[in-house]
Image (cartoon, rainbow, N blue to C red):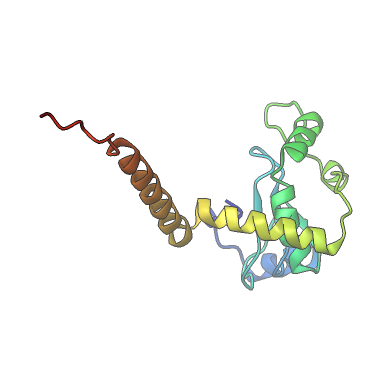
Length: 162
């Protein structure tokens, strides 16, 4: 769901941490992209990271809006198709770093990116954030109930018998 799951992570020495971060230091608004096994899972770094990564694609934009756009775009059917066409076919599939770097990304005007991100972020919150999604779902079901209640309980006036 675009977040980082720490399950299965482990501690490394400070020396290893520093060594890994020399090459691929994770920062706020970076995107992490799984490249081995389950390919194409996306995580947007929202908080100051206190971890190091290995065997994970690191995408740096230095721009919050662009990072949010890429978080959505990299989950799209177009990118999933690109991954399927470019991943290795061995016993454990992977997407080579060179293939990750060559994912075609559309160039759009900032205003268009803002519109797309705004809409997709709202949909994402409704689907994945219980504090947003549940109240919206309850409201939608309440309106649905009221609609069907009123339709089902609307009767033509009965003829009065004399």
